[in-house]
Image 1 (tube, rainbow, N blue to C red):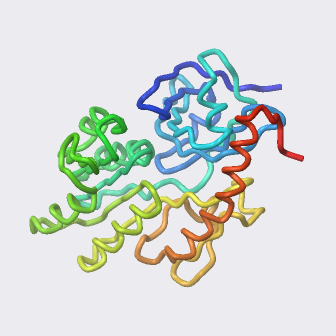
Image 2: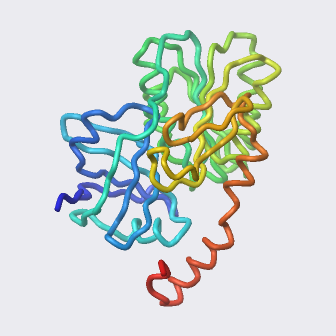
Length: 282
């Protein structure tokens, strides 16, 4: 049976972990914007994680995740030389990387991880790149130096003002838009409410705004239908039609309702496992 060894691990911030996984077949074909589905063990949950980086020569994929539920806590407890049972990918459509001119790449919280390879690819394609990253506090801000290296200009915000601009990434987007220099395209990845707010900020400026949606997902191949979203009045599946979509076309109310559908079940499952209840899959 093929397994996928963890070859590197870093703790980026409280509950935020980085892992480098040996998966040469995935690394050979991975592109910015795509994701993988990970399963730790035979009776484990399958979880989608966006590709934060890839190294074709070493045959590795980097994932960054936040420990928010039982499975991500299990994943976070693994160490170098531990193995994952499944590491399926690359899945989803890659980002449409072209030479657009001046582009803005926005990452909020854990969303900084998937915006990183997109930012790098856009710079390599010859774009002038302004990057904006934000987190609740300085302690939770990740990949700052990495983002600085792959952009021409980096702006930072924290909700509490502990570092950089005190406020939200949307404040800095408005600042860039009001400078008068044309923005030819913008990417934004982060919490659903952040992406929605970014889309509303850019709408009056008619700047095409690309977001990466993370709805509930089961198989990642378009068969289960769990990840359906409404975009431009049509039903789309985030796993095969996305994960990137035009943020001005997304039905955000529906997307946010669907994301919250199983929150109570997730809370109960986590509490069950933390109390020593074992597997609740039955």
